[in-house]
Image (cartoon, rainbow, N blue to C red):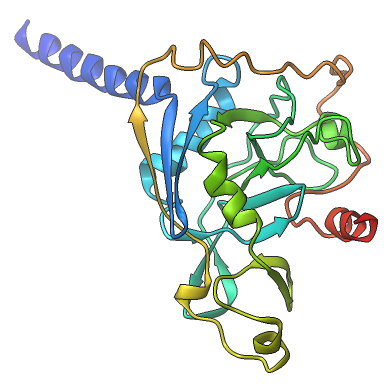
Length: 254
């Protein structure tokens, strides 16, 4: 009887470890411009949070870069590393996840990026809303089946996010709106090569609080604009994963 008991104990321990990881609701994002914390809505968006934590726990977000910034709109990361030179190197991704558009894309929320025409295509890339993007233009609570918010940054920690958002941005082949440190328009005109110190690097993302109720007092805003889901098919709208037509249009409006 001892052998089954031992096996059961191992399984129970493994399940406990998984459950502890699943309940993790606060992560610290350490960047080259400062640190900020994200409170994850694991009870409201469990699939999205579990997916995010799988990248956190595997270390695949470590040493990635903030690869897109649009003033007054979003900053985006979670997809690429800078390895000595451009182009950026994509990280290894898991299978895409089902969309969970339950919460609103208001300022200081983090949401998943995805492919155009497929609401259920998010993998590793995330973005932080710099403004209320829920019902403005574009309406992120509606387009592409809505973008799934899964966490929130505190007002104090948004200072670090805004420091990143206020950096000048530059376009390179295949890259639009890359925020850079200590890099000028003159450098870009002269094709000065980039190095690690020019990048906004996400040095690590780690779990700092595994209590399941840390989001209880945050009162996230529900997404009330999205109609009841009818199917899992794609919708006609604007893409955010590559942020091509959407960000070009956004810049034209500024």
